[in-house]
Length: 618
Image 1 (tube, rainbow, N blue to C red):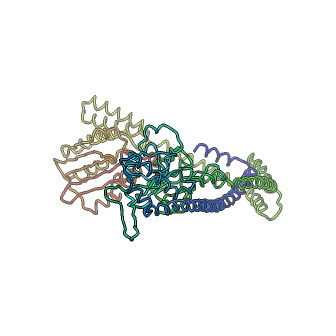
Image 2 (cartoon, rainbow, N blue to C red):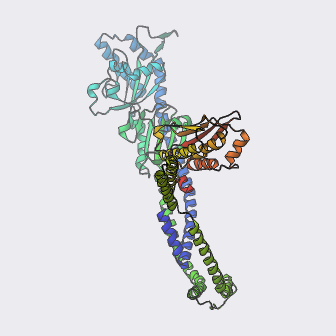
Image 3 (tube, rainbow, N blue to C red):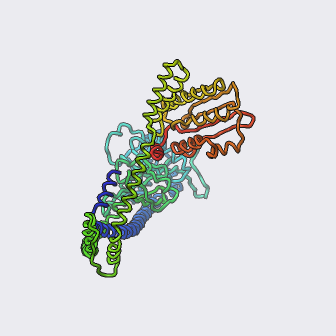
């Protein structure tokens, strides 16, 4: 606020020429900035749309190429269950004879080579049984026990003869090779396709045969390296113009198949947008990741159901707009220079007649009212000068008249001040009366005067709108004492307020109008046994007070008049107005009464008053 006030003061005190220059500067800057911003936003939107389309095409094309390779593996795997040679080899194998197992391994290796040997991108392929792992063991070796205990085997069984793709996993951890978990080797991370082979055989007579029940169905395992799956994306990232491009492939569960950050491969770290991408299958979305807006283009692979994506920061996507930003800045500087030159030339033309008037006003300030400024032109400045000359003839009479009027006002104000009663003088007078009453043994009178003096001193010393509830109750007790002396034996007052409320800030004298109303109107007709009960308590957010009497009661019409301030008592509507200003419109005063007798005033206030509202009341 102080800075704004200083800026406002500087603007008010600046010369007109400076104001004109600054106004032109701000106007031209505003127009250029608005146009530049609009053009930048439109360009950014179009560029971002093109980037999304381009990235989307890259992802789709890469997926198509991957799907072709993976679909080839699927097609070849469909031929194995009906391969008669494989069926006979499995049937004829003696699981207890090592020589038989080795012969079978050579035959099955040849069969697998027939199907998968032509694809150099396939790292290895196996047919796994509980007794032996048949296939290309030269590159890697899979222990049957480890495989049968792994998630790969479990998912192959769940596939029920269908090829199931397994996201990238760590070889040692998944296949039970704990001794190799700390080593780095060629097949540390693999993605696999597994399939339970329900082998069948059709003999020369056309009779269909399946594996005997005592022979477990073998499982096909085709292994792919992460380089094989991510090669296309890696090549694109290497030649891309985007500096912070990242890519990856994840399955529906969030397992990372490949990623530009190798540390994330084979981990379960689903991106935040995966669920949305799963519902859309393909497209582009814009998200804020780690505090930076990014563009993600994604597409689901038909062969595996995995989602591949490319992600780049929006800043990289809009990097070509930097040149536009530089040209806009240069254009802004040129326009500002031109505007300053034009503003200066115009200010000289405009401020010349103003300077004449300024000199004339300085002479008038010294008491010379016989000045006449030469009139030139019929424009606004010419009209202003003519008006000034015309007004100058009457200025002396107006000043004299105004001076006389102000003098009379000052005299009236001084007289009013002299007639005002000084609260300090009144307090001293009451103190003097108190000691006179004490000296004359008038104890009741002395106590009344003493309480009245304390009430006056408390009220005049505290200039705030609020004070502690403890102070308010102390003032109220003195008031009740004075009223009790006036209405002797007519009523008694009981105050029960929670101790934790005594230090809270409350509106000054907010209970007194209700106590006064109960005494004057409610208990006026009683000769004795009048009761006023004041209660105060709170919950977490609100404070409640009640003032209850057993007086004559009021009908609804009288209550409405009392709350509207149409009766003699203006204190009650005043209290409600102050409560609403201090705490809010949901707080206030309610009055419940009946003609049969008894009135209860309910007061609702907040625990903490708004500082701004207190200042507004002041």
